Amino acid sequence: MPGYKVLISNDDGPPSADESPFILTFIEQLEALGWEVSVCLPDTQKSWISKSFMIKDHIGVKYYNRQTNRVQAHKSAPNDFVLLSGTPATCVNIGLHHVFKDTDFDLVIAGPNFGRNSASIYTLASGTIGAALEATLCNKKAIALSFAFYDRDIKPPKIKNACNMAIKVISKLMEINEWQPAGLYNINVPLVEEECSVKVTNIYKTSYGSLFKPVTLESTPQNATNDESVELSLRDEAERGEPLEYRFAPDFKVLSGIADAEVGTDTWAVHNKHISVTPLIASYACTPLDKVPRLEALTNLNKL
Image (tube, rainbow, N blue to C red; front, side, top):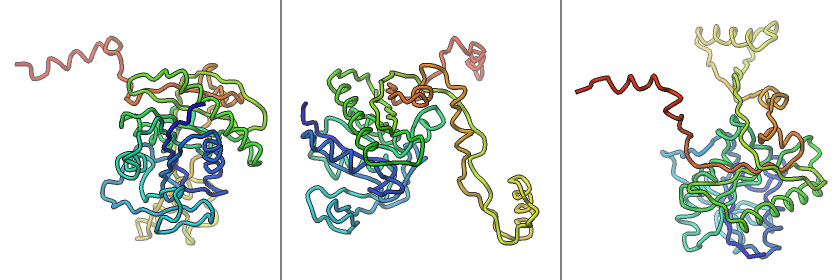
């Protein structure tokens, strides 16, 4: 197996049992195969941020030492992870064009993400996929990788097996070498101990409602028992000068849409504990003009 040169980023940040439990094992398995791995990560968790840049921010640099598991201001070992105070896409861009500018990478891998990135609602929001999109726009082959868990029993054998399956799929993709212009792949791997089959899938298209809930205050009435009554109470308090705030609190059971997922989609595959491989293009899909014929009327506006 060729020793590919790979840049790794993610949206979960440096190794952490709570937020980024897979990346260290994944990198160690790549290195054991002779892959040359460089790492540039956000310094904190940056999920649900897509391919954004914080253009007013100055990006700070720190380092994660793999031997001590400590974050420090200065590099102390050749294999230290570079940590940036930016988004996943920022890490990929700075990693490619500045930190590791002298390395001609064969591939950029974003992940492994802590949780699945399937269906349109997650795909469009994912910082993991955003990092892979950024790599594609920088003319690099790119893969977004996520591990789908089915319970909170996240044991080392499951992590090692998921990493092994992911590397087998990635290696096969590199061998096949089927990369469309501006193309990338989104891979979801079940976090299980058994071997999983691979399905080439489409994105399951779905939607959602509110992703936020109001932040309750000490003065919120005790009889405000549901979200709507809590919000009404907080709005009343806001009109009297109290601050009104909202927090990110999606209902993931509602968002999953598993029951409606069509056969052949990424959500269906992951629900049935298959590995999903979804080929993507780093471009918004355009509606075919023959599907919107009435738009032709726009061409008559302001006609000379």
